[in-house]
Amino acid sequence: MPAKNVIKQYLVNGYYHLYNRGVEKREIFMDKQDEGVFLSYLKEYLTPKDTDKLHMALSDSRLSYKERVDVEKLLRINNFSSSLDLLAYCLMGNHFHLLVRQTNERTIEMFMRSLCTRYVQYFNKRHGNRVGGLFQSTYKAVLVQSEEQLWHLSRYIHRNPATKGLSLVDCPRPSSYQNYLGLVNQVWMKPGEILSYFAKSGFNSYQSFVENDVLEEESLARIPELLMDI
Image 1 (cartoon, rainbow, N blue to C red):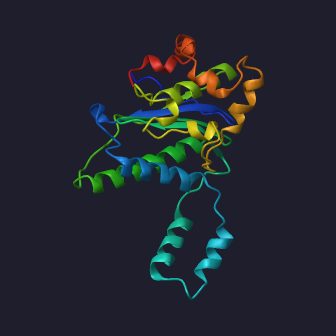
Image 2 (image 1 turned 60 degrees about the horizontal axis):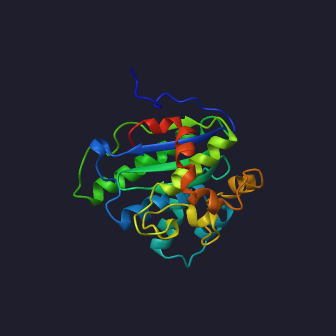
Image 3 (image 1 turned 45 degrees about the vertical axis):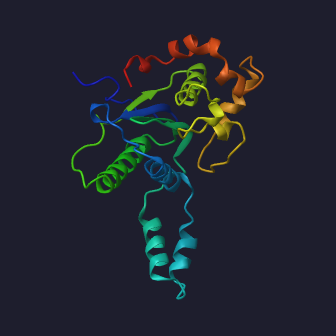
């Protein structure tokens, strides 16, 4: 029987919780460089690409060899900015979580194949020229069924990196939480949609919703995929 959430139901304009972990629960982000590389891939895939500007740059005779290689690389890289919105993310030592909305039926499939394949190639080369798979299996994708599930899933993702003795804002693991608080602006992140719901939520702010410990049991109950041991 296939593992839970490996078989995926892809819908146009569907919201999905995407996640995966290292094979045998091994670390997939060994240090800040690994985390930075994974985030740089997200940025490249989800920032709109101005192909006219890039082609114009290539025609500039003053361009150095390295600059030309970088521009050509950007032109070749897949771009999903027009068909996928990243609503929330966090990177943990041995796994990651992404919350996305796709506007085309197969965007997630292409996006995750590009992201994971590229990261595995980078990781294997950097860490001792290792070979073989890095992830436990193919990524999991769970269709979000309601607005409430969407809110609570974003809350879970932003609380995932919680570290004892530190506020969520100061947690060392990368997440999109600071985008939601207006402390950073990663232009490839889309927090606005979830933030717009909070006139309906009964809370004064998204921050109070996320950091209210009383909601923990309710949040977990609304995210059935978390019955799987991440």
